[in-house]
Image 1 (cartoon, rainbow, N blue to C red):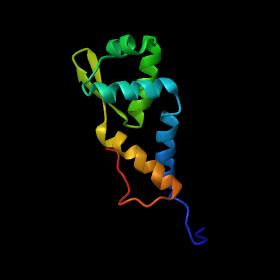
Image 2 (image 1 turned 90 degrees about the horizontal axis):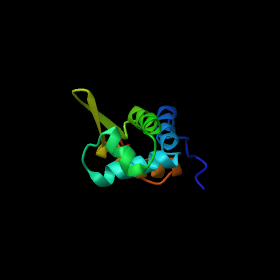
Image 3 (image 1 turned 180 degrees about the horizontal axis):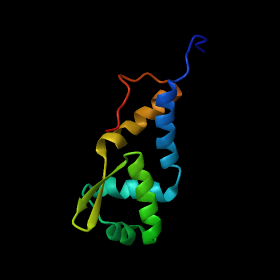
Image 4 (image 1 turned 180 degrees about the vertical axis):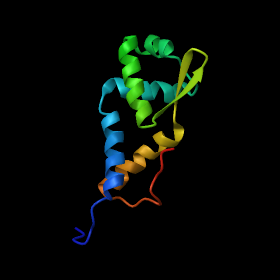
Length: 111
């Protein structure tokens, strides 16, 4: 045990906590997984059809995922297309390493 270890910076801890909180729901994990596997933007209707979850529930979860930037929103006329934010999702395993005190090359950014 490293008695001189310092806690994670508060701002980083809050950012990581928001990511973990956003993924602390099975429906949100399903949506992230669907968008990551589809690898192309989808409408709410397409996500509803693929997930079997109601439109208002999907919209609610997409809003939460967009707030932490796991999902990006593109407006096309009156429609919104949702796609996975590859940069952010690729940071997530590194975030877990940072929280657990495992060495990582550099702090991840989720832009």
